[in-house]
Length: 260
Image (cartoon, rainbow, N blue to C red; front, side, top):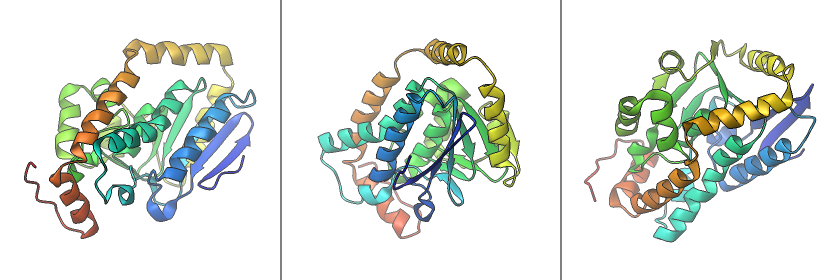
């Protein structure tokens, strides 16, 4: 499998999918998200694949949305369609019948944090960092962020993360229940592969049905939540605060939001 923005390796029923845009911290620009969706859907249909590992190149897992696409204000329907298009990555992970392991090698910010939460298991480097950073650019959590965080961390923690955009360490996130293993940066890939091989030894059909049942046990309204996120995010993208946040990011200063 060859992609412009991904490196994909299949060995012993384990597919390693590496987001390969280190220069942009693997931000979800159009080509990367399109490649991810196509790759995940293809792997889902490949009987040789039993487990998928998702990892980033360089010092980041995924920095979230590509702010270059947001520098110019979108019209509200255009913004809604943009959020729905990016959210296809989350749906591809959740709908995949095989277990998906997030091997978090570095920063998982904004939508990157949502991707981690959408995965079935998480192995993280000691140096990984996590944040619902949307608030810093005048936006709400999207890509299922408002769906996953209260279910994983509880409602009050979800509000804290969304309201403050605070950066959390691997140890902090592990104590709150998201991370299965914390390892050194040098061990990350091997430990993720080791975990994948443990799963590969299990019965594929039972694993597939177990994943479906456990995901359905939360409730089946992820797509409805993504639609609501898209509508509300589109509204945020019309605000002055959003554009102020984008400008402040590029000017390397703290944004001063005015509530408009």
